[in-house]
Image 1 (cartoon, rainbow, N blue to C red):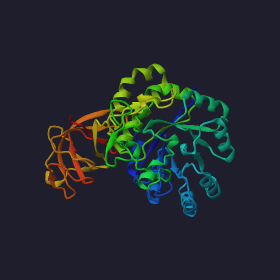
Image 2 (image 1 turned 90 degrees about the vertical axis):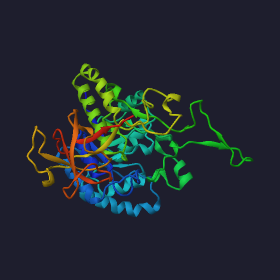
Image 3 (image 1 turned 90 degrees about the horizontal axis):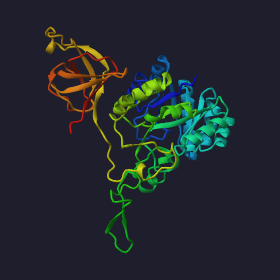
Image 4 (image 1 turned 45 degrees about the vertical axis):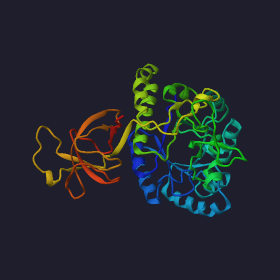
Length: 424
């Protein structure tokens, strides 16, 4: 019997954590307000972290907390205090890259598993053994490794040691994410959580004696986005990932929306479960996986380094924009009665309650939208009415994060996601 791999999903906020849990994650990784590599993400206060860990644990889902900056001297005392606070919250694991941070975590909360971040450049089985001997439970493999290399590592490390690998999401131009471009251009250090993603910018060349005269940089005739990687997607290769002995399938995206997280978690959840049931069932549902995974934002897909060295097909040359087929409208936070302003008896089997959401993008009464459910179904519905926080009917919700009650032609459930297809 093949081991069931963990599906590890990112969360940028408490709302997104709940979405990841409901939509199929086995584990969620999150960051606090310091010491993680996504300083621009919303991240979690200690109170939110406690709520998130409780929510996940009640549903049998693990929570891993990132503390994977490459620390300077002035970070260490703050890190010590941070680990003391985390100890009280009892997360399931800490994700760490820096040996100094590792030593602090082992000293302060030895009961919490430590996972070694991909930032530590984990490219060979001796590195895995080193960290295991120090007390690490798991190592996150460098993204530059092939499936064959991962199989070799699995064969050379203790059976109880765990191997985690990214299987979906954005790729970095620099080796294992250790980039200096952001710090050089903007003073914001990618290795301490503040990357400005200069790899997505468009570049030109200026000759020293001709200031102001910009010459285009052509990697080929299609354009000049010479550092812009495609996104990793391994949805078509779940059997190979399982056969390689990877214990945890990691999704990148700790700055992504709940719609992205729900889409990716739900799709990989079903693909993994189908594959473990039978390869035939997995292959029979491939069209569904491919259609669904394309409904979240992405930059075109690649299989990265899994099948050997990358080539010109892993880069995007003509633009730096995302493919975006659906617009995220909001998560159903609760079901509430229809306001008295429209309290007439329900007719024609119209729903007699509203979905309360915190709006993320504008939509209007009369729009055709979709309810996205954790079980894989997508339900087309019409927006019948909307009410503001005072219970007054409105025709649309133009203000971001506006709390709105929405009456739909079919009743959603709490934690369902509302989305609409982008009109082209």
